[in-house]
Image (cartoon, rainbow, N blue to C red):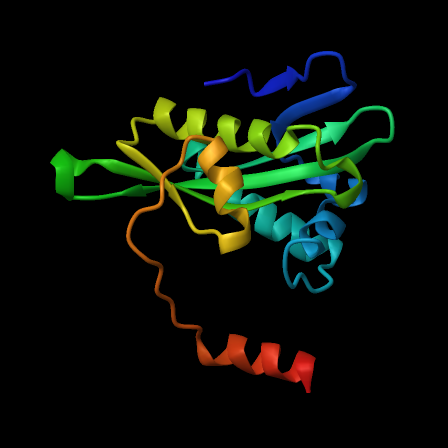
Length: 168
C-alpha cells in the first residue's frame, strides 16, 4: 500500500487518511460537490468518525489536503467486504470519489483511486469494485477498471422521501 501520509510530487498536496479535524478543512463541502450532504454538527461528525474508526483498515476514507490552503480537495473511501465464497475472500468497495471543481485536471482522482485500490489489495482483496455514472466510465477505465455486468439498486423509503422533498 502507498504510504498513508505521502506527498504528491512537486505539489504541496498530501494524501492521507481522514482526520477528525478535516471537518473544519472543508471535507463536507467537498462531499456536497458529489451528492446530497446535509449539515452535520461537530458532535455528529465526531460520532460518525469514531464509528468508522472502529473498523480500522476495513473502512478507510482517504483525503488529499492542500497544505498551503489547509483545504481538503479530494476524497474517496473503500470498505472491505468479508465473504464466504472464494475461500472466505474479501472484496474492496470504492465509494464517494470526489475532487474539488477548482482542482480537477491534476490527476488527483487517479491518485485517490490508486491509493484506495492499493489499500484493498494490501488487505487481501481478490477484487476491487465500484459503481459510477456513464460520464465517469472513461476515467475509471484509465484507472484500470473494466465494465462488468450492470448495477441495480433500490432506495429505502426514508431516503426517497428526502430526495422528493428536495425537488418539490
